[in-house]
Length: 247
Ligand SMILES: O=P(O)(O)O[C@H]1O[C@H](CO)[C@@H](O)[C@H]1O
Ligand SMILES: O=c1cc[nH]c(=O)[nH]1
Image (tube, rainbow, N blue to C red; front, side, top):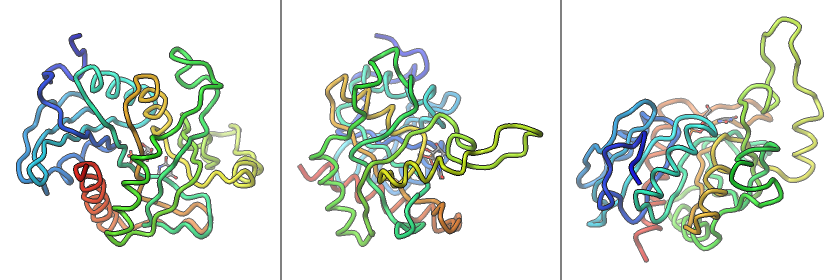
């Protein structure tokens, strides 16, 4: 089937694993460390590069932020032959002892009601491939990261939907109990794409996982400085690729 957004990929272009990043700028940051790289698509928020890592063909594609653009990227990548997908993204930690700069992997995501209900009803779980998760976790620990696992939350809204205040005059403000409710049920982080990946990959029956750099700890509002944040993404990408090609 011809792609509407990732127009210029062919069935032979994608490697053993395709990394998914929200930020288009992260594609160049990460693929610059590969032995070879080739730009395949540059359209709107979607930048797709394939190249070689330790002799193996691997790929990386940006999804943009949120459900809509991520659904497009994932559907078009899978119909172009993507075999394995790992979201290498950022998230906010909702737990005091998961620090900014740590790595976090989710085996399951809470999601907003109705998210992707065009594909499947809300009682279908948004879950990672457990074997892939374990392999990446092992590789990331070996590379020196503190790695946490647990249930996360994928939201459709960054501000109110993640319990942040905004300045809409007389607008709805976050309910103080929102984060507490989920923290009390051991939800450890929030971001905006992983559930889309987990749902679609499960429906297509291809392995998928996430590997998230904690950008901010929401308890103490500690952010990773930009330069360090980029270095952590580069290092996390290497750990993910090593896990995915050592098979
Ligand atoms: O850094 P990325 O991968 O985009 O991930 C996180 O950052 C964005 C919000 O700033 C959302 O996309 C969220 O999921
Ligand atoms: O708190 C955060 C940080 C990064 N990305 C999110 O979606 N939320």
